[in-house]
Length: 227
Ligand SMILES: Nc1ncnc2c1ncn2[C@@H]1O[C@H](COP(=O)(O)OP(=O)(O)OP(=O)(O)O)[C@@H](O)[C@H]1O
Image (tube, rainbow, N blue to C red; front, side, top):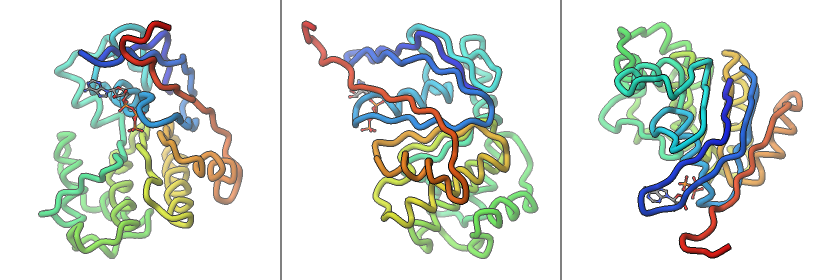
C-alpha cells in the first residue's frame, strides 16, 4: 500500500514539486505518468525513502516514512522496495548469479542460491546465471534486473521507465513480466513512464485486463514564474 497526503518536495535551487494524494491498496497497480521533468523520479525516490518530503505525509507498506529513522531506512528499503531502475545498474564484473547474490548480501541476508535460481527461472533466464551482463541482450538484462528487484519479495515494486527504448514486443513483455511478478508476490506495482504504450498494455494486461490507477503529474511552474 502507498498513501500520501499533501506531499511536496523542494529542490535546493530548483522547483517545488506538489504531488496529488494517492491511496493505493496492497497489490494494486499505479501508472505514474506525465511529461519529462514533472517529478516522476522524485516521487519514486520519496516512496523508496531515498529522500524525505519537504512537507506532507507518506506511508508505504504500513510504514509512516516520517517515523523511519535515517539509519533504519536502508534496511527498510532492502526489505520492502524492489526497484527496477531505467539504467539497470548490473555490476559488469559479476555474473548474473553474483549480481542477485549481491542484493541478498546488501540486505544483510546470506546468499541463497535456491531462491536466486527460482527468481531467475520465473523470468525465464535461469540458464544465463553464469554470464556477465555484457553477454546479455537488452531484454535479457532487463529480465535479470527484474529478477533482482523481486528477489527479496518486496511489498512494493517501483519500475522507472521500464519500456524506454524497447520495441513494441519487448515493451509488452516488460509490462507483462512486471504484472506477473507483482501478482505472484501480491506486491503493489508502480510503473513510472511517459510512454503512452504502457497505459494500453496495462489495459490489455497480457492474458486479462488489469485494473490500475493513474497518477498524472504536470510539470512544475517555471522558477520565477509569476502565475
Ligand atoms: N538535484 C536537483 N536539483 C534541482 N532540480 C532538480 C534536481 N533533480 C531534479 N530536479 C528538477 O525537478 C523536476 C522533476 O525532476 P524528475 O527527475 O523527478 O522528473 P521526471 O518526471 O522523472 O523526469 P524524466 O521523465 O525526464 O526522468 C525537474 O524540473 C528537474 O529539473
